[in-house]
Length: 49
Figure 1 (tube, one colour):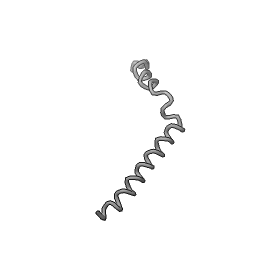
Figure 2 (cartoon, one colour):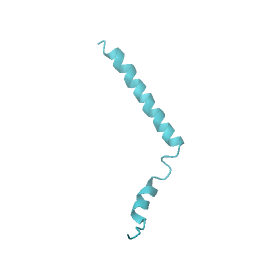
Figure 3 (cartoon, rainbow, N blue to C red):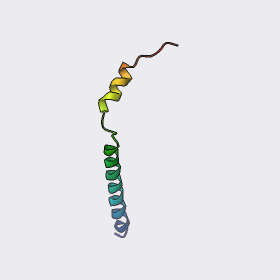
Figure 4 (cartoon, one colour):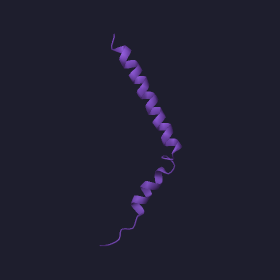
């Protein structure tokens, strides 16, 4: 039972940290062009050696 006094604040802190990182990624534009990277890797022309 005493372990809950440590685990509950740690889990809440990790949840807040994850939520903060998610909002930081949204604000910095990480999710702006999700399909672009997938299309770029397929459509890129390789130069012959």
